[in-house]
Structure formats: C-alpha cells, structure tokens
Image 1 (tube, one colour):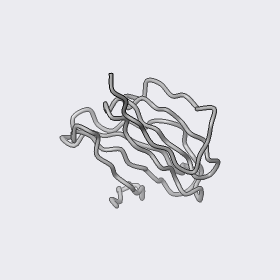
Image 2: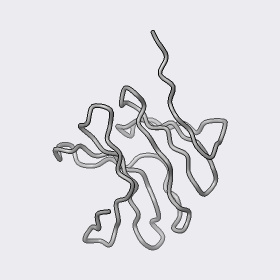
Image 3: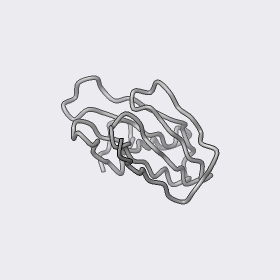
Image 4: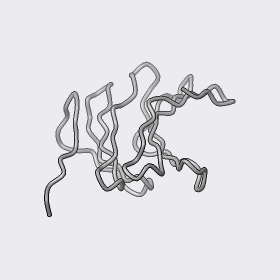
Length: 109
C-alpha cells in the first residue's frame, strides 16, 4: 500500500502482461471513494483513472488485465457489476452479467 500526500491510498497492484504497467485501486478518504487507476512503471504518461467511482465503504473492486493488456475486466464489490474498461480510459462498457468473480479465457486464433 502506498499513501499519498492527500491521504489517498493505492491498493491491490497488479502487473500488466508485458510488465510495463500496473493497475491498482486508489482510495481517497471521504466522499471521493474508490477508483481504478492504470499507471506506467517508468512514470511516463502519469496515471489514468478508469471506470466508475464507487463510494467509501464499498470494498473496491476485483480487476485484471486482458491477456493482450489493452482492457481490464473489473467486478465491483458493492453491486457485483462487471465492467470492461480500456486501459487508456477511452472506453468503458457495463456488461450485462455480474459475478462474484470473473476471469479471461485465451482462445487459439
């Protein structure tokens, strides 16, 4: 866990498949709550907040990179909603199913 100067905490880091980026949950105390963030390990490009923000006390999300590293599958603990998120913040789609857990399956071309 990393604590920022604003009291924020960065939790549950996971490496991208190529090892160049991390996804983590950023928690900001008070009304700001939780949000997923993608950042590069070398510091280039800063950190990009992605997906919906969830309120304090909702226990964040379970998230993982797609095998090609371009998207993130996230399941939020407060409502069980599943989202497919672009790592660059360019797109997000709430999936029409929910689950306590989710994972990727890689198929042969």
